[in-house]
Each structure stands twice: as structure tokens, then as C-alpha cells.
Length: 156
Image (cartoon, rainbow, N blue to C red):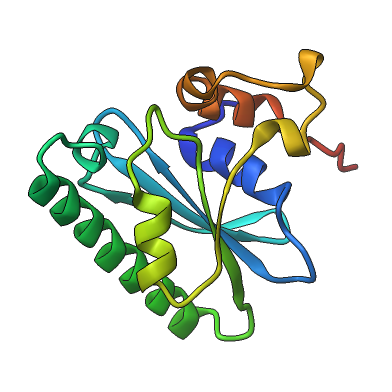
């Protein structure tokens, strides 16, 4: 079986699922952002957004704000679409994947998004030798770590 970023991200989101509610997870990559929504270990929605980690950390305040607003709009649209399509499953929260550097996106979302938001901390949900993973390593290896969490059940 080959893992793709969407299923690897679902594997990490599953670590944060509670009470039959969905978890949205947003990862900012080098070229774009990936938003997934999953529940019960199943991937329901995956969406690429044309905003990169570099855009979200732009040196110019106006460019950074514009990137945050584009992400906010696309995340809100995706959450609204999910709610219309799967009304019986509520999104409990949005998890923001580790970032390469501080962007201020978490605070922007907390101020403007109607769902609770938290940051993914892999050392809190995984057994990590030494108890910590460097922020840059968490960001670079995020999908690789997610792929390593794949669980297969044998069906007869």
C-alpha cells in the first residue's frame, strides 16, 4: 500500500479524534496547503489550497495578512461544504500542523474562525525518544510520520 499526503495526514488527525466528531487538519507545505477532514479514522474531504508556508510567513505584513485571509476563506468554505454534505458529523476542531516558522496563522484563525483551533504537537500524541521533535523536523517530516502510523487490519 502506498501512502499519500492525504492519508498520512488522516493518520495524524485520527490521534486527535474524540466522541465521533470530525477533525480538520491544515498543513502548510512548500508549494501549497493541504486541508483534510476526517472522522472515525476515515478521510472525508481533502483539499489543496494555493497558499504556501512561505506565503503565510511573508516578510511584508500586507502579503502575510492576504495569505492568512485566503486560507481563512478557503478553510471556512471547506468546513461549510463538509457541514452541508455530512450534517450528521460535526467538526470538533481545526488542528494546525507544525509550521516551518512562526506565521501568526493560529492567532488569526482563533480571532476569525468559528471552530476551536489548536496546534498539532506530535510529541504529545506519539511516543518520541527524548520527548521532543524539533519544530523544523516536525514540519519537514510531518507526512512521513503520518505515513508511518498506517494501521492495517487483516480481513478474511
